[in-house]
Amino acid sequence: MTDQPLTDAADTPARAALPDPAPPLRVGVIGTGGISRAHAPGWLGTGAELHAFSLEGASAFAEEFGAILHDTLEELLEAVDAVDVCTPTPSHPALVHAALDAGKDVVCEKPLALTEQECQGMIERAREVGRHLFPAHVVRFFPQYAAARRALDSGDLGQLGVLRFERTGAMPTQPWFADESQSGGIVMDQMIHDIDQAVWHAGAVSSVYARQHATEGAGEIRTAHVVLTHVGGAISHCRGLWGPAGTQFRYTFSLAGDRGRLDYDSARNTGVSWDEVASAAQASGDGFLPDISGMPSPYALEIREFTDVLRGRAPAARVAAEDGAYAVRVSRAAMESLATGRRIAC
Image (cartoon, rainbow, N blue to C red; front, side, top):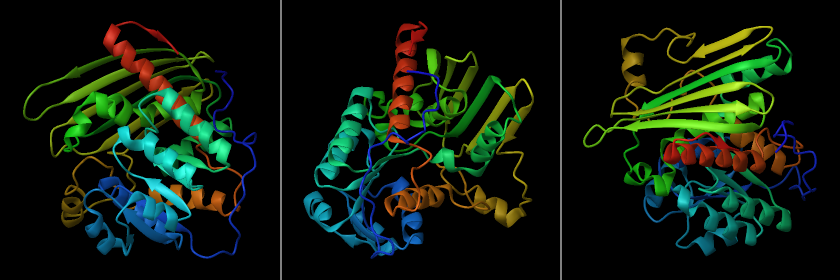
């Protein structure tokens, strides 16, 4: 791995773009849990025709978003142009391969898979069949993080030396999240966003050191710290917390370079004053996904960019499948560090 930017898709083999103007993109959503409901409005905003298949909850999803229901995965794949995989992580590789084998472009929730080897298999298959594979690293589309990237690209911060990222939210209620063999735990499911941000801003990683603490029983709390040493010399510190039910989602970052420093805290730098009614509505969420009221939906921006690439209106998205695979690689190194207590070369 080099310290060159990991988002340059200029060397990606050419793929056939859908004609523009074209009929509405037919998108099959696989898995209709919580994250699918964040994606669906974005697809509808592009004019897409939604289809859905899920082992449970598909009828409610279809009623809410006007999706066409399918009884089997094979039936859905025959009916759509692209697939949006919103299922639990262990099922991603098989579903992505099935969609690619059927000649469909794929959006897949993060992490792409639980191992880098699985990620690479998905990437290689996408190249073989000439289709797109987009990892849904939505944090790259949050306006605060996108603004930080622009500041870095403009040279306002100079050479980065120290980066800090923090992400806090409620422990997910679905049992599979608490099982690290299924979700990768807090590192691979939650902190992978900030690991990806650290790599996006400071480049490839030479070593990883991590520590974690978890309580037991009701009101479980998990917190983890991951320190990345980048090939270019910068140091990133990522902290993640899964708290009890009712924990408010919060994210912060600090980027310090030799020409300046940029800080952001979602709990303080809102730019919005909430009255009592609005505050109560804002606090009514489950704390698992960040509140995006008051800003353009990052999920919609992400899906719009993916759609532009599929329609041939943009050469590449800001996040490539290789970026998703590299985030998994670094996250796996962090998990190995947790298990061994050692610094892990990456």
